[in-house]
Image (cartoon, rainbow, N blue to C red; front, side, top):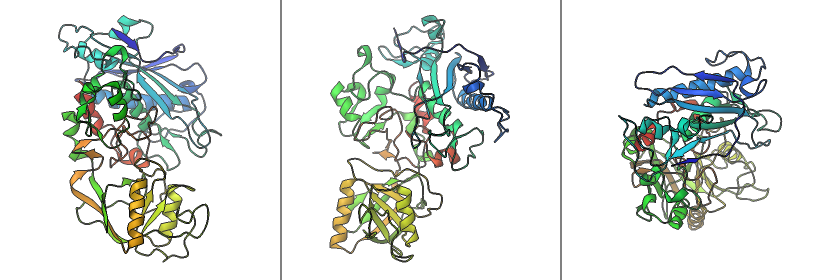
Length: 473
């Protein structure tokens, strides 16, 4: 039995890039699905950059895709060719937000028989096409439809950086992860999206409702464990799976291969201890200074909830404080809202603060996003309830705060297992099929691109490969 992952029409193919097969590696073929003159065929002249020798915009984009496909191919084993249909085309975008790319398995298979020498699949279980073919040693997609033989379908936004589409940004087409701060590394995004197509995805079970396609579980469900319920998704009802998808920081991956890499990949968890308040695990910001990984050697200081003197709120930190020593040596507790996280941090740092704690203004955890190269003090987020507890302690005062690394736990884990992204408010397209944003350093398959990921993570050699090996790669 098989099932289509997408309902779509595929443009006439104009080119194909085949990567040479390597010993013990997968052969990944990227097919250019764009029509002449646009996307991968855009003739706009471009200077070679960052190891990318292309001399047109389209050629450079296609070279990035080939490089990403090559990187995955070297780290996977399969006798079956992995065919990727790719489009570099305009996607939804505004001046301040937009879709960078999307990809997934083009087909899913269940109970497909194995050819001689194949391992076969677990009975009654949906598998992503590329993995199903690896296990069965069979060209399942070609047998299903010779005209739609692709294992992975992908779309990436060619409009990025044009007026009205994430203004001031754009793609970096280099292959060296050395993109300027205002550009987004296309290779990192392609690696991420190809990861979904290869199998880093819950697949056909709805992460929102928990309902299974045709009643069959996906291969992921055996390894998805809800700490609160004490069950894997394989043993849950639809309603239980739906609730688990919203059980923030309590949905984890229990596969051995991914877990064997946790201590090597993830930093020690950062803990906030404050007078009169139970220990808190704050969410790290995507910018700002780092807390040392040596346990017991963090950052300490008085915790205050400073009045910024005006604006929409006196407690949001959106206006400059009274002078360069107004918060000297202190942690500043501010509320989320009214301005960017970066502005809050910049104002506190300019007033002499040693760190910033931002309290959420809605349910759920908070890992402040954005970028601010000039912020050198650590920045963290806490829940709305944790923020209220800290404010109450300050009112009873005085409060001394200490943020330091744990001697026992790793960032982004619960009871020792790596977390899947399961925010309290369900995020369509992001919830469940990603690692949690609390992981540090950032890893490839988090739901948002971060400066740390694109500049320092050796993609895809993080927890991603271990998870793929857990499901059969």
